[in-house]
Image 1 (cartoon, rainbow, N blue to C red):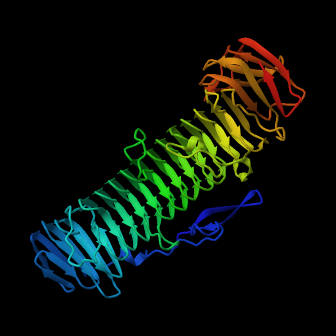
Image 2 (image 1 turned 135 degrees about the vertical axis):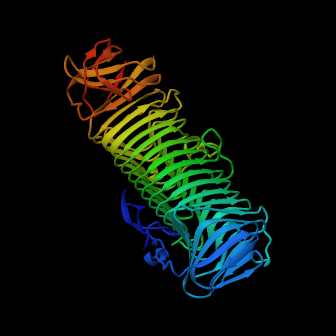
Image 3 (image 1 turned 60 degrees about the vertical axis):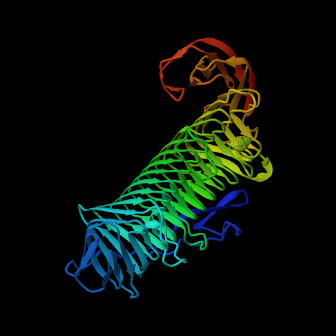
Length: 576
């Protein structure tokens, strides 16, 4: 199987050119890509002759084995050749070593085994073409190492309770519990595939690590790690260092990143409960404390995500693409962050706490679909366009970008609701709004605005309402294809004040109730027409159904008529 995922983008003539992707050396152009490297999976890995199994039985400090390919020295058993080996019983302080020179598979069948080793890894795979660990049905298996390793060879550097220098696969219907007192829980220095099973890891450093790749097809995972939870960290070959999750249930609490890949993180489905750095109530430290982090591409197609992090919830040093999924996010920094392009095509995103909701540091943000709710202490959606987050982010540097950057916020569909203490929709490049709905509440202070666009803001379709302070309030550009109005009030209006706009003496156009104090309101919809006169009312009541402060249906009981205006320009400025 070859893992090939989409979405590598580069800017070409103001647009995006897409190519089948993978990672790329950061010194290369984004168009020069390589595919994810082949993995070691084979249908034959999961099949064997049950009559051809060598039993290895542990009994305290003694070991017995019936069959060839095994040598025993005290409390250490070594498997010297390929074959199928069944492990059972308790080994109180010993080790199983795999050191096979032939080209066959070494298959370890864990069938109720409890292994501990005070000075090394209970399972140490020195050499094998491929090792398969099968968790026998209904079996409970346990591994624990000591807090210090004694190395016979000074060049040895293994650091996990279950450690393989070559390709490793785990699957089955049983349970494997690993207590890693030294460093990592389970590590492969080559490729690592987990096809099924229940795996629980408590690790002093990383929980589960595959250097070349970590592929998870399914399974149940409970991980507590003082390092990263799931990890792939090959930084020498651009075709590797990826994490690919097809499905599974994941409960990960990590001091550092819950899921981390040197290159790509690719998630097709699954259920994820991720806590990093102690959660959003903590300030991010010097270490990376993110929920899911990719060095090049983070792509999520579906899944259920409950993420609580000190640092960014989802972070890519390159591209971030959301094709679906349900996200509940609380973070001490950004909700969704990409250094390059960030794209949302579908899904439900609920960011209950963040510094910035969605941010691209030096690329475009494109929203084609999905439902987004975000509560932010700074910008709701930010195209930083070559600079740091507005204000630099927690501990960051000031902005340096300008409208000449060429970056865009594209809104081509979907539903966006922002509760922002900083700018609501912020682009240090330009904004192109063609379809969808955007509702912005905030900010209340005049050093930010509901809309902040350094370049051109073309509103050519869709529905937008943005209410907040007036000191830096902006409206769409006069080059927009759709009409809009910017209301500026002589004094601040209280949160909860109902603003109603209707055709003069006729049909309702808008009934909206901001959740924060506001002194400006920008409104654009295809329902507005040139030459038409509109009445603006404050307060009163609506019998319609309100969602995010916007009323649908019902009838309006008038409050106070504030003004009347007639549309003569693409953006009509009205002072009340």
